[in-house]
Image 1 (cartoon, rainbow, N blue to C red):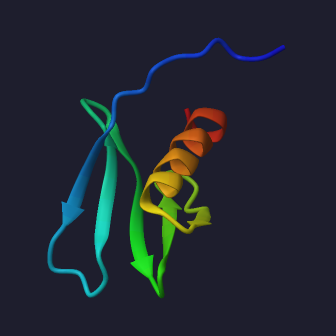
Image 2: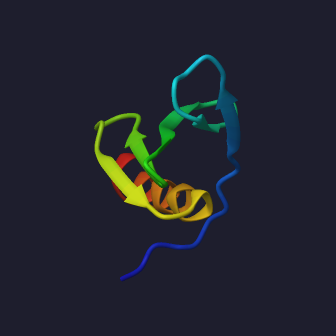
Length: 75
């Protein structure tokens, strides 16, 4: 049985002062669900709760992967 689809509102905030381009993915009024860094031409996301690592070739893909991981494993 599949889960009922639901919309998740998120904010993508750029983190200043880091060596590599970095963004924090936040669910408004809740918490940070992960941090994304651009390393060697690809994007690495570290999940907030379990510190799992995800990789993707585009920023859009890694955001979608992080949201999917959050919905399935950390919610």
